[in-house]
Length: 134
Image (cartoon, rainbow, N blue to C red):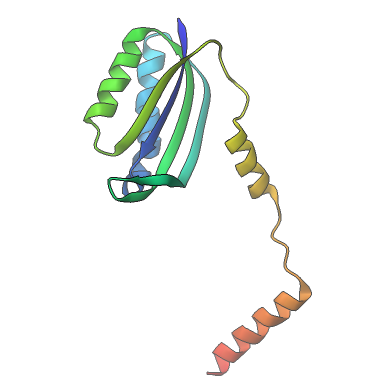
């Protein structure tokens, strides 16, 4: 079996379908005896350039080990699914299981507590009080 990296971009209006799509593609891979080494849902991100007048997309990354048949089936599913606006399937030399740099960066950002200075807090309270008085 060979190792592959699969990245696909989903139309931002179809983001709620992403978990079902991931489940479907995972089942295709695992039903043929393949393994999923890494699955990352990067969420909705800004595109480097517009695709079909769309400026954002939902990114998903899969690192898998499987035969050619599941890959052909996934390629066909991508081709006939209008929600998938771009995809890339790349053969790799080994299985990648560690988190990608983008996922590590997102994890760091989510771990940071939101810090509000005392001055900012006073300004917020003043704004709220003035809105209530009006």
